[in-house]
Image 1 (cartoon, rainbow, N blue to C red):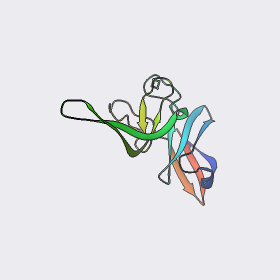
Image 2: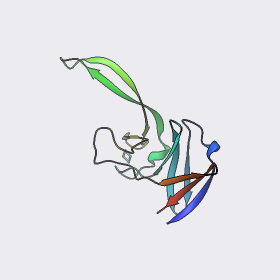
Image 3: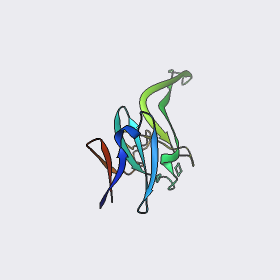
Image 4: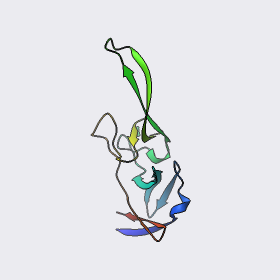
Length: 121
Ligand code: FES
């Protein structure tokens, strides 16, 4: 394992993300609700570049008892959508919301003296 300096924490603004390719490892760093999280840029579906997908709030559709739509609901959880086939993942947990078999691989981050470090496997 090696620790890599990514830069000042202030370089990562809310809702923003950066994708790195360092020492043969690609990963994305996201700021979510003030915290920094990092995931390998490899989708568990077919290894697509998941961290380069669009980020938005989770959307669900409420259904009535007769299974008709009652409209879309926008939750507070931030999700990233893989650009290859549309699988989406919770940016805080790395989990696919509908299938626990699919999960992103975490990259450990540390912030010291306002500088962000990633620990690569
Ligand atoms: S490779 Fe990401 S959804 Fe298929």
